[in-house]
Image 1: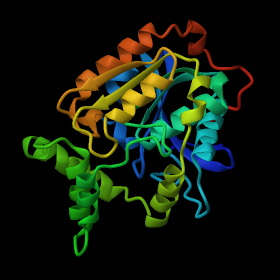
Image 2 (image 1 turned 180 degrees about the vertical axis):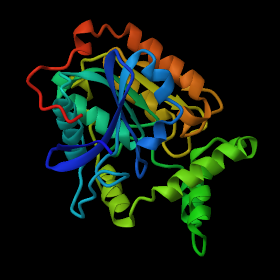
Image 3 (image 1 turned 45 degrees about the horizontal axis):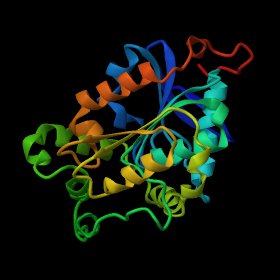
Image 4 (image 1 turned 45 degrees about the vertical axis):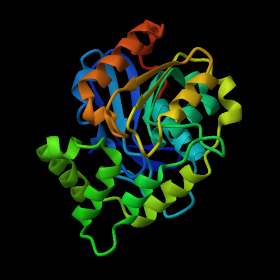
Length: 282
């Protein structure tokens, strides 16, 4: 099990493929298994790095306050320890918060940004819809599997669970097999709740692709419109008919959009090489 000491904790990671490095950052309570519909496709042309944020999966889960700044520093430290000077950064939901902070706190590490189903936080972002909140709160007397399915009803577009029952059960099994401790979920949630970088977005100077699903009720798509407007040169793409987890619902198109953007982002071939003086973890 590959783990790397970065920013004072042990982080689980995997590296797939070869080419320019790309670091993928998952959302609240999810571990690196989230990328099961991305890794094979992205790794055909890019060295794809997935890892578990602090608090989830096989990474350390300290019971102490977390912040988005801290988790961005974790990601930057992991890249450094693995010997990558910079990388393409892809973040979904809370992972998009981390990606934005990574670009602001460690701009030298970021070649390009993909910000999916996310927002800039703060009072001017659009909150979770009442329908999604109601769905997530209906968990009294439910089994763990039922709680997960209830959350998916908010995260997927209407009808997706009925169309893809076997995939949904696969996702339920993944979450049951690698449960996130309640205290760690709450630490991550508290970090995301105070995230706000609206006033700082003008400092992001790397090529940026903002992605959203038209039926996202967890982070409504208008958040992505506002985000793209505030980052210079950012491109916006909407997945029609898709919910919050559009990278699962419409994985093939998601992968195509990401790979096309990476090819056009202007990152140099020097990204393929690792820095010779780095303390490699693998």
